[in-house]
Length: 407
Image (cartoon, rainbow, N blue to C red; front, side, top):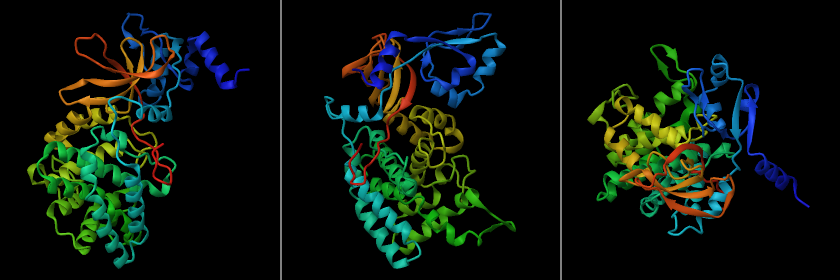
């Protein structure tokens, strides 16, 4: 006797392609099975495009297709690969994929919560800062042995009360990762950057105490705009009160929202006047914001975040730091689910600095739309004829159970 799930999977294998009416196109899962052409034979919708991606990036696609007289689209159902399956498979991959100790992540998140929950008690919060800095001193060592840092970032999904802490630990990991790429022989500076990344948003913990006290040109600043403009200053004050004197840490906390073109806050610094630690945190913070649910209901995939940030480099970021991020995680960061040109589906495991378009991939589904068991690893080669056709999903961030284990 087959279970309901098995019966559905068998039905999918028997009927692999559906001719889907436009009215239902954005309500089903799968990928476009063949190019959709206009009357002039130009491609409107290429084969392999994920319908999930279309919902996020082109919600107007149905009306566009109707204008070209298209009424149906052939859709191929791709068997789901779950994040849980991917995580389970990581342990058996050779060579192995190193991940940050999840217990260290859990302890850091807990200690961060202690500071937030006691922000009005000066003695407790300052002791919390000192404790956190001791924990942070271990992170650079862990980061150095974790070449695929995106696989060690934590998902804030279903953890509403911990989102600020999770965002901060993710930003710290990314900051240390980038700093290590740019300044590998400056361990003290790397550690300062990690601490700055960990505390970059700590000023937001004061927000509820000051919501009626700040004014801008006579008008009270409400909501997100007020938090955005003043939390760097509050954070710097807290760090100084806790005895922090390192200019790289203080500069990262105060200036992580400055922009390369001079249109940031709080000081409108530009270019080389922005502290180096703050430039690194700015890039890490932006990537983390784009790929998390902290600021967006539908976070970007890692590859989408990289693409958008490249477009903002001239106005927002130091190009040197952006190049370091790109060379470290690639155009398709580890954890990105990709469709290969030969029809197989896999998940990016790692990207080499000199081969951004040729990562190592964990192949999960073969060209006949069937699961590969066990999953296989392959290295894309420039001369091999196989390339990444499209990114479908992002399994980079992991969930943590209450005891610190990654799931």
